[in-house]
Amino acid sequence: MLSREVLSLLAGKNFASIATVLPDGSPQVTNVWIDYDVDHNILINTAMGRVKEKNTRKNKKVAISITNSSNPYETASIMGEVVEKITMGAQEHFDHLTKKYMNLEKYPISNPFEERVILKIRPQKVFHISIPLLKYMNP
Amino acid sequence: MLSREVLSLLAGKNFASIATVLPDGSPQVTNVWIDYDVDHNILINTAMGRVKEKNTRKNKKVAISITNSSNPYETASIMGEVVEKITMGAQEHFDHLTKKYMNLEKYPISNPFEERVILKIRPQKVFHISIPLLKYMNP
View 1 (cartoon, each protein chain N blue to C red):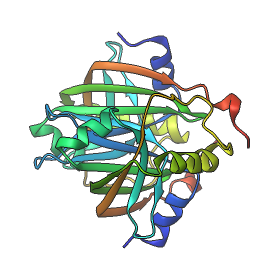
View 2: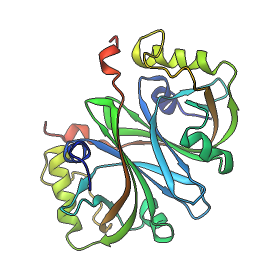
View 3: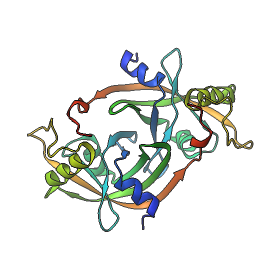
View 4: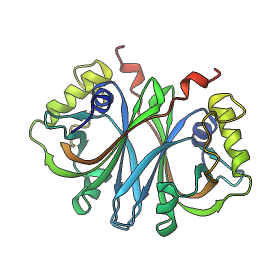
């Protein structure tokens, strides 16, 4: 389902923004690390009780934007919904992301009292947007 | 209202994500250039009829995340609402942003059929988040 370009953005050391909706209907957006599974679901590792986790208890719809860290004009835009919240193995998955993004075995400032959780997101609409601006730019 | 740290992120050549909510209650997020005015409103320059402009006709609430382009672990998170849509001077404001972000006088691939508009956003909640991770990171 996900194209080669989108998979490449997901596999790279690129940052994403995830938007969720509060019970009062207003949006929230936060920056996150990003991953995906073999079935092309998007995986976001967070902690139980954080705003994005709480928001998706009532409204499962999310929007994600992933930006190429070497080209801010290349992004993937994904709209989908949280289909599962996985706590088993979520700490190990967080360690895996810490290795990917920081090249460390363990996140250096972990909170021992929080429980990690993976938001498994099924993409429903996916766009790859690459605005060919870099060739014009004056430094 | 905005702190020195947040103003510094807004003034720099930093990219932002803006989240809005569709009429069906699902969120949308896109990457944008960012600016602010003397009254500390956030200014987003877009075109009439784009999704984020259309979404804010019904639901004026938006969430914005601005990331320091030299430190992905420093962001400002702003929740607020669109209080005005300004078309007068919006093209000149777009030129000003083109200069800031691309160091060009004119955006190289403008669409002559679209009308630029400034979304003027009044911040209601503002957080500055700086996770001190860079010192730990292995390249």
